[in-house]
Image (cartoon, rainbow, N blue to C red; front, side, top):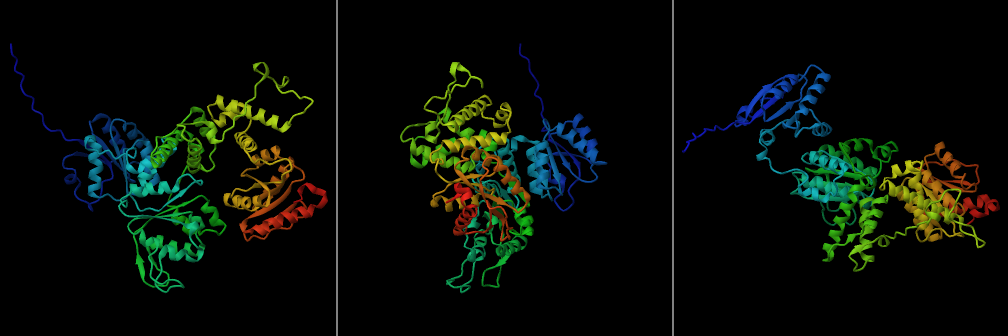
Amino acid sequence: MTVNIPAISRSVVKPRLLWIGQIPQSSGPDLRRLLQNIEVAFEPRLSRGAQRLRVEPFSAALVGISNSLCSGIADCESGLEEIFDLATRIPVVIWNPDGTVDDAIAYTRAGACHVLVGELDGPRLRSVIVKSVDPKTQKVDSFETASWRRSLIGNTPAMLELCEMIQLVAARRVTVTITGETGTGKEVVARAIHAASNRSASAMVAVNCTALPANLVESELFGHSKGAFTGAHTARSGRFEQAHRGTIFLDEIGDLPLEAQGKLLRVLQEQEFERVGSSETIRVDVRVIAATNIDLQAAGRERRFREDLFYRLNVVPIHLPALRERREDIPLIVDHFLDKMAASESERPKVLSEDALDILMHRDWPGNVRQLQHVLEKACVLSGSRPVLIPSDFGERRTSISFAGGASTPSEPSVRVTSQGLDFDEVVARFELSILNQALTITGGNKARAADLLSIKRTTLLAKLRALEERSRPGSPAADETAVLVLHDDEPIRKLIARTLEPAGYRVLESTSPEAAAELLECWKHQIRFLILGSDGSDHASVTVDRLRMYSPNLCTLLVSKTAGRRVPESDDPRREWLATPFSNEELIRSLKRLSSNVGTTLAACSI
């Protein structure tokens, strides 16, 4: 028997959108005409809108933030929280005409699928709403698959937050300042912002402000006319003109001379300038991204950087995390660099052994991603044709101590003193290294938990690891060698001191904290004759010196002023000298010689 099933007539059901709160003014096209294929319902109050979303079928909701949306701040927070509770099943769009980038980030984290700030234009509004009510029409434009994302390696929360920020700021011309330690990839992030923006078809011009000659800074940035100065045989366009309709990246902006900072401020405000030697005003459309590894606000207080320029540059600050703060990304970064190196040499990529990867995961990487890249390049060269990289390729020499009977206690040491004697410092260092390695193994490399296991501070653990690593590497101070300990938070000054003293026969040890300096003094209290300490003139330096002299009472100290041109105080301590910044190589050497002669025969160990 055949049963005839009647055809079911299906009508096309329009997607439904609930618009809550503020509605765009009549400056744009009519909203209903703009969304003619979408059924739009309006609800002026937030609380009523949340109730309708719970009981009525809607495809999406749009909340227009305004003062009339609810009766008070508490009601708004409660109503938005209720709306976002529904965001798992109903896409929620937020429109805040007075919103900022920080507001957009907060709404996105709360659960909004799209955040609109500023005035709305018709095409943009329609695109967002259509994507929200009908996911089938939504193109895959997540930053997870975007082309600019490929250069940003890592999936830790810090990296995902960075990508989220890039996606939010890329579409706008807003000025961005990128901060972070050396080697964290500030230029890589700047290029990602440019690639994700609507300026990607135009050029991104990168400028290293440190490398610009002081007398040619303005000419390099803004160009010059013919005959503007000796050697200007032809007119030349500057970097800002070259970046017209694109992006200019000002790396190490803190090194820009004060004279050029004033002209840069005008360009940022007016988008116009004059070439050197010309009165013709040139207008440009340039997006500015700046980067620095120094504290620009502190530099402003010290009159080394214009405060008004800092506030103009720091519209959207982006801070890049250090590599040690996202260790989980190291395996991905390693694979990326190994693949890149293999492609450049037309070879098969090398791989890391588990022990080698464990070593890289546990290092602190003061040079961050750039240092990791160089270490991998060196390891690939040293490994020859071997396809697997092992710990020895990274200069790792593990020290192990075997305990008698499988375990030992402080009352039953595994080391015995014989008639031939032993090196006490070396034996103690081996025990310390063994204990630290055991704690790190138990905690999977988590230094904070390892420090808790050993009942010490995390900073103490890090300092001990650095000191023991320094002791184990080739070239450590010999018993009769004069060593200089440099305690300064400014890396360029530390490197300058090292480049000056090492050719003169000194062994230079660097530190950025009193804790780490104390550990180094414990290791080499007989070799370290001089301490070079950065000081701002406060009592803090004296406290640090007194603390470190507990380890080495006859320590000769050279205090280096942190403020350029600062008058240094006189000292009645023969073991203490001052040196004003900036200083020359000769002044540094003379200061150490004078310091040594001040103490005379009383401190023969300090003589040069």
